[in-house]
Image (cartoon, rainbow, N blue to C red):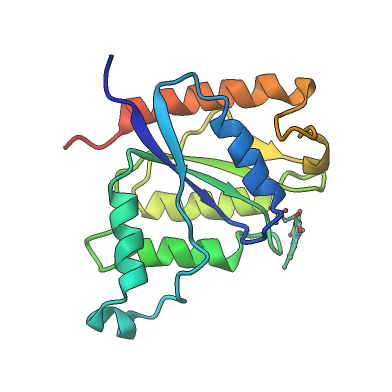
Length: 186
Ligand SMILES: Cc1cc2nc3c(=O)[nH]c(=O)nc-3n(C[C@H](O)[C@H](O)[C@H](O)COP(=O)(O)O)c2cc1C
């Protein structure tokens, strides 16, 4: 069997009780076994400022090294004001520098946008997708995951309710195959 892919989960919400994080946790549990899923935390990253990068910021360096070690990245994000939360945009900016040495470049990505509302955080999903184009991250096109009514999809045990499980299982399987197909060589 080939080596399992290393998939990092970046969650756009910093909330302790984040529904988005719980959705990502439940998704990782649906892995058929061909990948190792782990969270990459973004909450302690100072706001990106190029001036500070000249001297080096240890939290930024550690984050970049963590991303570089991944084969693929799943972004799970809520929507803030019809876009991605600032914490997620900051993480993207931190990982993208120094210029020409982006930690993100070439890493296959998936986007799962999550909202308690009906629209499934479409705005956040596509603003994020726009950044991934520039970052040279091949983002899986199908299946799309605009997860609305997020308050209804998880049971008390933290797993998906029966009606939602099939969709997320298919997404996870497609994403693992996507990462295998597009992971950077070397
Ligand atoms: C600053 C802010 C802006 C928000 N804007 C939106 C929005 O544009 N669309 C939306 O569906 N929900 C919006 N919400 C509600 C979030 O979807 C909701 O708080 C959700 O639970 C956040 O995800 P989490 O549970 O993972 O933290 C907003 C929440 C905050 C705090």
